[in-house]
Image 1 (tube, rainbow, N blue to C red):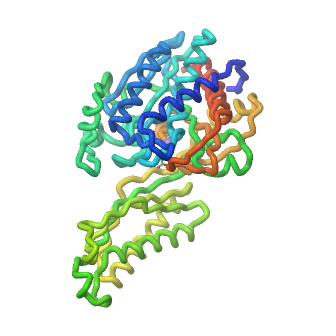
Image 2 (image 1 turned 45 degrees about the horizontal axis):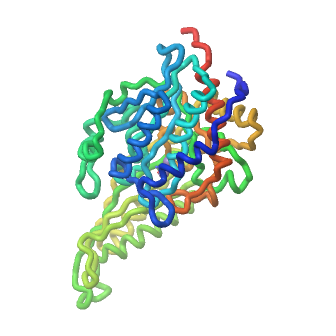
Image 3 (image 1 turned 135 degrees about the vertical axis):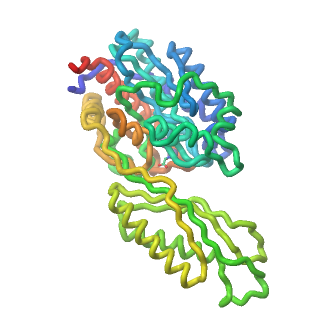
Length: 419
Ligand code: HGY
Ligand code: MN
Ligand code: MN
């Protein structure tokens, strides 16, 4: 499929106004967005998104996990829709673009097609996937993983957050009413626009990232168990200090990731002392670990070396250290033909571009296992993301949305393949 150039462009100012408007839902004083999945703020932005899609003539359906599907009819309604979109939930100290750009750019593409009176051969779909971030409920990209069959509805609905609230209860709290079973919605292809969330495009002065795939991810829950005792009477040499054990764990994680660098990365984003008290030696600390690399074998090597290091620390400090792998996402290649369309679309628009692999996980990484999928990146300032200072320019967001429009128009008018 050649990436023929379509003369239509999105309305960049209108796209930008939706980014600004939706940033109000969960706005933080520092200029970011705190909109955890299925929180009241997420409920507000979902209601806004539904209303905006319906006002654009789209028919909005919702599955059992709250994922929103906004359908724009095509001439041949027997064809599986060409989908775009991303997510509207954020990290606790999230930014105004992560996930939001791709979802709102999808809406903007539909609005632009409406303005131009264009009807596509194949229907189009804009998707807001529930819980992409994985911050409140693990794993990340949760609903798209369930959509492609990696988890059952019952499993996901029963998962609880730190306050013991289940996904089912959270869905009910925002008034979610499913109109279709999970997985019932057919998708013919999926194209996701997203900020890069890293420094490469900006450093190279490139506008478009032509994303060829996503790296592998492994998530762990861990616990260091020692022995609580008196801070004043316990000699240093007789302590089984879980916090100091965790400190050594963190240094081992860093050392091993660096040894597999520059590709491997590892992060301990959460650590909780059980029953913290200023004058009690910590007896138990729970933590989380996120390990990533483009190669599956490197994920294995990091885990193997880390388990050996933890065993040594535990023995030397008379601790118990548990490490439970709760999620593994293999590296995933995107569809070569659609990656090519993204590249030729950027070319046709005269936009500088380069191929790359995504360091962040995305719903596209799950969809790629089921339908032809690709991603489009645009730069973000200093590569900052998962931070309230996350920032992108209107020009780059518009350019990304125009490449999305080019790619969707080509896919949505592709001739039916002969069976
Ligand atoms: O963790 C990730 O890569 C994504 O931002 N949820
Ligand atoms: Mn995201
Ligand atoms: Mn994110």
